[in-house]
Length: 53
Image 1 (cartoon, helix red, strand yellow):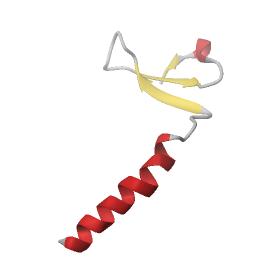
Image 2 (image 1 turned 90 degrees about the vertical axis):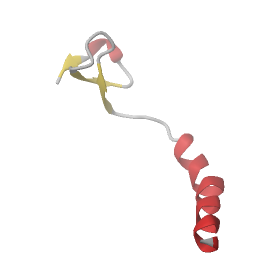
Image 3 (image 1 turned 45 degrees about the vertical axis):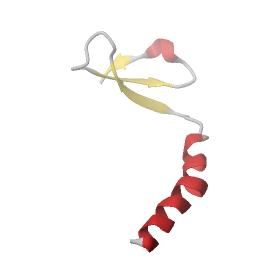
């Protein structure tokens, strides 16, 4: 149990900041805010061309 606690602390202190500072690039798939049953896809650089997946 002590070893598991040390592992979790290590992950939180060292690995979590690496994932939270990641920059999104390329295509993103998301749920439309007006209709959560639809999946949409768009480019991060140009969000005007969002289309239904």
